[in-house]
Length: 399
Image 1: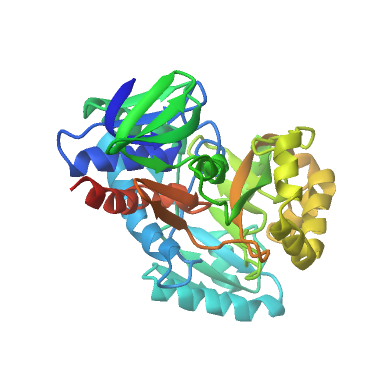
Image 2 (image 1 turned 135 degrees about the horizontal axis):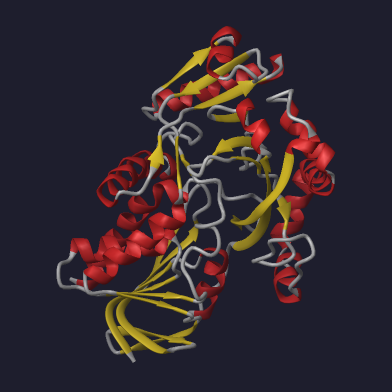
């Protein structure tokens, strides 16, 4: 039996941030993080484009808007303290046709309302910033950055251990049960007991909720995001992040260009239904996961709303030429032969029974457990702020 004040299920960046903020806020209190994999950040936290988001996309007043802005400042301060390399390289969001300009204007208004350092620019200024980009108008976001989130996770784990906590890998969480004034979590490495529990299980967060006996009102549906990287001789085409104007009805940002702290340039991701919650290739199929998706009425309602967009995403998944054409809208000189396959990621997207893709973060309290049920992008940027929000819900239970 492992005893702690807090047990966190999930060793991704949100779970680690929650454990660290808990120990910081209450000196002498100890957290135990349970991670089913043999290492940390093996899923969403380590399989993303590494962007430090500015907060321009999110509706003012939402959890995403507030936590992204606050979390960005906290993340950058943490990286400076820990010596984690990051770069504020900036970003352009590019309209390539007139029909996109009104959406670009609304996005600018949203960014300014959120306090983002951004401005509308014309094609001449765009060429100065990104000489190879196409576009009739753009937003330049000065403060967007890049970082390696796997490194951030390792440093957070170090902070937890320094504070007397524990990070246990290879410990798959199972059923939970009440034990006096606490909760016991069964794991593949024995039981862990604490007064409070935080469910930060990402791709499996709804299942952890279900194991407590609660009804799964929302369901996690996995979407695979496939990436390419530019061959070294084509990296000169991209100086900073280049994004399209997003579709406001779909919570994905479209394929884009992202430099990495290692010197490469990633292209993507698309968004296709994965046949397993950890389905990082199109051939990965786990029947139980696929049935969990297909048996949920919300999935079919979502499919009926977005079948056309979903079809286009699937075609880009099957055709490198189609993927290249999507990239050429932003940077016309990119060619199919410039693209090398890169590791894919899977987004844990919460889906409501009415078929709506939950756009905002979702955090719910249940007795002595707090569940983070929807934390897609910009969760990595927002992680330290999300962790503090979870701790704010846990501490009153301990008083």
